Image (cartoon, rainbow, N blue to C red; front, side, top):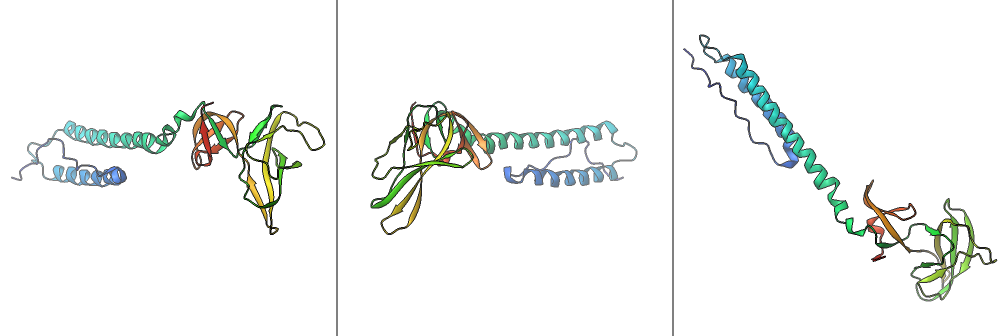
Length: 218
């Protein structure tokens, strides 16, 4: 008589590390089916295993598989999806200096830019939110922070809204340079962007955390 394999739950090989758990589960399931088939083929025909035992073994393996998949999902949320944002949660409510478009509401805005020495000319270029140039103003020899009052060279104040700013400069040898302009704005939110964590500023602009030039208490 061929001896039967004990009807206890078939052992499931331990899953691999987090990087290969899905592959390990697939391999383990194939192994489990092979063992279950061998168990059926070699059981005592005079004392066959109860069908309930098969159901218990299948349910046990299915439970282990679901638990591993759940663990992988939770690990992805805590390790890849949220940890980046957690590092910047303390920024909310602080003022960040970025090159995001500037919101003008009639109050002068402190602008920062870094002009190299020996410039022949330097002009602050003011454009609409869509990028249409509105006017220019010379800022040659101005020391940052530069107080921008939102008034055109002709004396016309801008309407409340969002504007794009940069400095176009010319060096002594005639080479043209475009200098970024930064300003402070309150951080309203930290979120996961397409390229990683980013901050949402008070008036709706969003920039990556890597573009923040300075941070201070409001």
